[in-house]
Image (cartoon, rainbow over all chains, first blue to last red; front, side, top):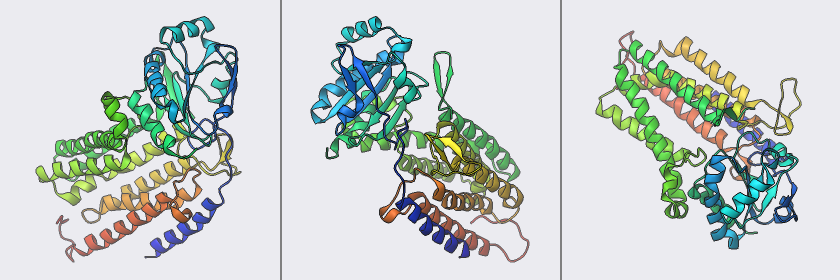
Length: 172
Length: 250
């Protein structure tokens, strides 16, 4: 009885701490604001993550030589085609520091990818997102907060759809 | 933190890998304990494996049912290798249910069988803490302490380390007292100890799921489990013969 009473008091006291939770620093983990970035796309136009605040964004880090990255691109394209009208954006960040622009371009043409493909020439996004293995996928909600981190691949289309469905249902 | 271990072309997720090691250690401990309690070790091992496999399948099916539209478009996603598409409640429900059915079918005595599984539960609890330490999940609230951990761009309570120490403490308590009392006590001791540790440590977590009013879900669940365990300890203790008779399992 005493144990339970102490536990209940402790639970109640820590509830107050939760209510006063402080704002988080951007970090590549679920529940944290997504680190912002600005990169050139294949046409030379600068695109930043912040441009898409209010939309659900799939940030996919990939390289053309990476088998699982190549295998999951059709799923990304399919999800983008069917859900972009609902507010879904796919930003495919090519890890250009460990790839080549030519190979990235050839891959995009070969697979007829229509979402923005960005070139991470300085490795800045890989570092900000602490890239450890390719592909890595971060799903960012309409408030700019990371909802899911999916390391490795290839990701099935069902996985991507299930992860963005609830986020897309939220009001912009 | 090392969320993945790169072995050539293979990216090994360290969190799930650590959990797998915990399962292996847990099965080994359960078999040892089954021998000590004079249970059929093969049956206890099969019961644990049945629960684990049914739990995995149930967790994936539960997740797919909750996201039916997505899986109707791509049914092969059911066999995806992605570890982020499991439903914990569905997995627990189906895993425990399957293990219970197997135990009944093999006529395994409930309380003694639970006692055999107690050290496995302790090992899994420790492995979970280690896996969260590796992946950076289950992180603590920001705090500047001599023992703080720098994680996700802040100095934080090392809640994963607290959880690991608590798991070792609970395992030690089971080792010292859990094997000598009445049938079912060892299991309840591990469950109650783990629940009490959750109630205490959750207060230092930085990623708690909250209920209305700011109550931390894990603490509320921990209190309920702790209360139920303490009630069962009292009841099962009172059901014992008054003298130093044999352990009963009703």
